[in-house]
Image (tube, rainbow, N blue to C red; front, side, top):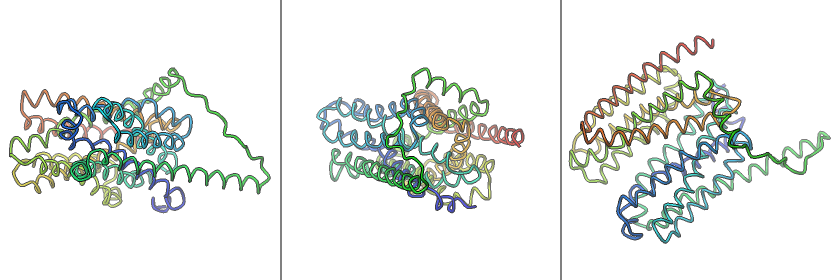
Length: 414
């Protein structure tokens, strides 16, 4: 049975709604990048202080994975997402009212904490409802939203800030997130009415109140993450995704600055070139059914590393459309590899899938944070070109090792 048929039978509307939420979540991650000069001028402070609006969101996004995963497993994944998108919408809207830079940083922290529930719990929900053989195609469809959000945030954040102002720009994700929350709540009420009608027709007793679920204690949350780490294959996937985040973003984060300083490209052209990375992700999504059917998981792992290497090693020059194409090639390779890792992550610990996906997200964001910090030191000492080549070669080695481990794991399981 095709993944499309599975979606038609199940929750296609919910999947689309969650993908839209993922779009708004990822757009929010990148929304402040182009508006830092405006924030610095209007709210006071240096560019570095204004950049805390980005850091606060990213820190909260990674930190609160430790909360959302166990909460989703305890309360229900869609139910917890409904709570989170309401808070995210309110926090995003409140950003429009910030009177000081400190207030905006605090509100961005709350927005990041709430937005961080959307994608991991959506992935876990897909893992719960879609058979393993069709899961990668469905996850690729879901990626349409999040990858579009990355591109939109990088490009439209500057465009909207220059036209309607930075305050109203924050209203865009707020409206989208509010709409997602409304649709999810209406769907939940509709599902409850259908269930009650079915039980009434069959003569079953209808419960008038939803049973209260106790909050998991910190000890219980730690035990759940410990259960994930106790699985050997889970430790492999978590290690790989951490190294993937470190290598890919430890190098790619400095591509726009390198193009600007080395080849004197205007900053807006560097931004468009970097946005090509997300366009490469969209290209993978559009071609995912064909690629998955012909390459399989090991082929996607190895092919993804090759595409990433070709794109990164070809970078350099003063014609920005070519740099955009090379970034898109690298982005397509990254998403081929990362989407495969996502599929593995959904099966690490099926009984507590929300917690497992949260651990996966923590590994990814932790690797990115370490990679960017380490990259800053290495770029200053050995130069960007050496960092780019080193990270690319190490990613190829990581993909080769993962392909071998996947083959051994499948052999042992089969």
